[in-house]
Length: 173
Image 1 (tube, rainbow, N blue to C red):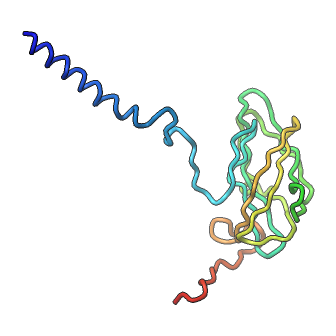
Image 2 (image 1 turned 60 degrees about the vertical axis):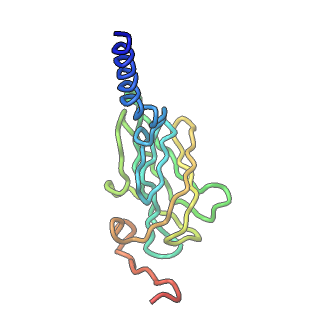
Image 3 (image 1 turned 90 degrees about the horizontal axis):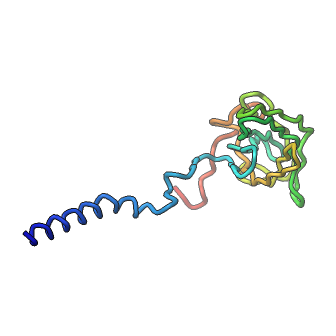
């Protein structure tokens, strides 16, 4: 009788371990619980307004159009994206920025709404430009924005489509 009780306890313990092992292997912060957008643009989700997919689309060296999506995380209060500037030390100038009012829980996509912002400076496709997004309450979001060519999914954002051909590395055939 005692041997049967011991076997039953051992089977119960083994079953419990088998069922809980996957939970222990994941830990307390598994990758599946984190946002992971694989996109060419920059994302910042640490503020009251999310900056999503931020890029500068450039048809020619020295100029481009900044586009991103802004999402108001507050479900009750409006938010304002009040400005966009180049960070200190960055060789770039941002054209006049018209403030964007975001209703509670609203998303505004500058690319879809033809609200892209002109940026000029010493950059071209493949570079990065450090910009600051200013919010209505004085909050500032510093982002490192990639410069993308005006082709493929970005074609037409910065004027006519650009040259999408990529030069082959030297020595390759």
